[in-house]
Length: 253
Ligand SMILES: *[C@@H]1O[C@H](CO)[C@@H](O)[C@H](O)[C@H]1NC(C)=O
Ligand SMILES: *[C@@H]1O[C@H](CO)[C@@H](O)[C@H](O)[C@H]1NC(C)=O
Ligand SMILES: *[C@@H]1O[C@H](CO)[C@@H](O)[C@H](O)[C@H]1NC(C)=O
Image (tube, rainbow, N blue to C red; front, side, top):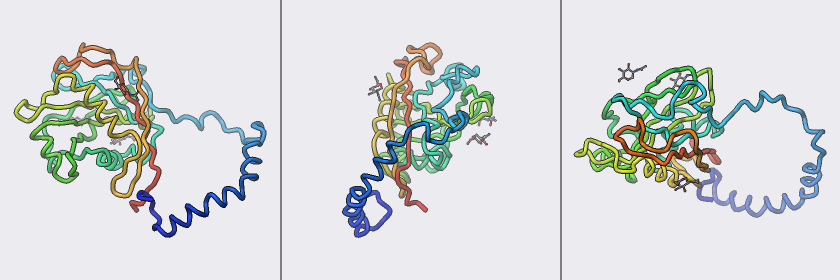
């Protein structure tokens, strides 16, 4: 009951009582699930307007951001619009980032120019909302270490323009060199950064009283494999990983 809001004795009671109660109600449960499908209330289709994300390519956008030098970084991870809404806010993504070993930039210092992305949602090219760095186990000052010795980092862009309001977060993830190498991306740094982030995210994670359950799915056909237009000329395998992040327990308030 490590991640539960309720105290251990109550949790223990619940562990014992719940199976008993569900045994008692098993007959009832079966009856409910056996209801003929036609008797379920009909829900108009617009109630299902929520989607994982809209392909930026359909709305004149790009899966490469604009790094300001004529090239772009791949948007290689998408946090699904079907994630818990709280995760898709700025505070929400920061807390989730902390749960998987990232944090805000060193002492709030912002290194380098922001990049922009066009997610085909009608907002055009919009600056990143936030940049998060690997925190080496300390969400207060760990990102200072990342700034010095390099590591994983990502920029966040939100698809919330009125043409494609999925609220999905598009992430440009990359593994960086140290400060001496001016924070360039390591060889294969886009694929490596993506896979490291996905590995940290998948499963159950928690930070500051909020517990997340995350699943991953790989998508192709959004990013072109190779290095055409890609910043630093570093090729990618063309995979975008879709993460769906669900809050399963919230003791934060
Ligand atoms: C994006 O960031 C750049 C650099 O900080 C700034 O000059 C520009 O005004 C920003 N653009 C928008 C639309 O906020
Ligand atoms: C979209 O998200 C950005 C960044 O969080 C925010 O500044 C903006 O107000 C949002 N726009 C809409 C239409 O919700
Ligand atoms: C996605 O693709 C990468 C690279 O091939 C792989 O390492 C990873 O396990 C894949 N993830 C999923 C969820 O299939």
